[in-house]
Figure 1 (cartoon, helix red, strand yellow):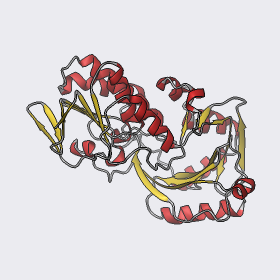
Figure 2 (figure 1 turned 30 degrees about the vertical axis):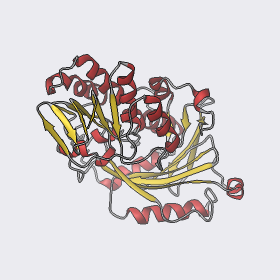
Figure 3 (figure 1 turned 90 degrees about the horizontal axis):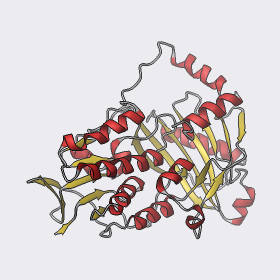
Figure 4 (figure 1 turned 120 degrees about the vertical axis):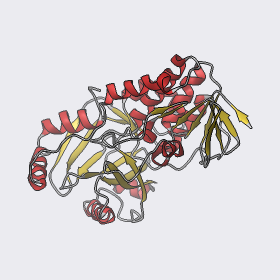
Length: 365
């Protein structure tokens, strides 16, 4: 039996960041993940300067042998419509490969990581958690993403409405593909669906290309993805031989009715807690920040891990992100709302101040 002060289930950015902060405070931390790192993790994958600062990343050191693509511009628009180019003149984000980024953060955390150990059975006896009869600790952190077993035990129901479903692909570009692709490495391209229920993207990170599309409406996702791929190929923005089969994933937006964030001896962080930003679906920054907040709450609890002792974490999450209840919809026909939205996307001011600064870069967060 492995014993520790804290067991973190999930080795992604939320779990590894929480483990890193706890290890720095002297806690013995075990991180469990079914995957063996470095793992294959398809993700548009960019980090803002706020994430860099929160993690204390040395960008020069990180870039040694890893992809770190400065982003200084964006192209935005409606699929099939006119586009707007927005230039910042400085790096406002950095593209990363999640297989490299996640592995780096987990290794840096200093936690013990038994290789390839998933979690199927969670039990709590006499104030301690036991996982699959192999690992035990008084405190458990659920960081296993959308299907986290810890979130499941806290009552997560994954059929809720504020759920994004997405398909995407990430591939290394051959020299002939790299020469033909029209997507600039410093300029991610974001194309919103005409009904504004989702968006597609093209992002070139060094010699890799990531393309995907996500929607709130699960119906017909494959058709939207196929049409988006065909249009990008026809416009010469991606390779003509871009594979048709893409990987799928899902995650909750913050507006969903999430599982409880804390209970006796347990906290949820990142996608396990349903903390993805609503407009963009971006999850790395809330994952990192929730991991740090959880660790700070654990440190402040002083070994007392009842729900009341851990509740300051929930309070702080809600202070930063709101309570998460879905906002009431305006009594307007959906078609009219979509038409008005499509008109706004032609505005350079709207593209920069709202779509980019507010929704994707969270410049004021």
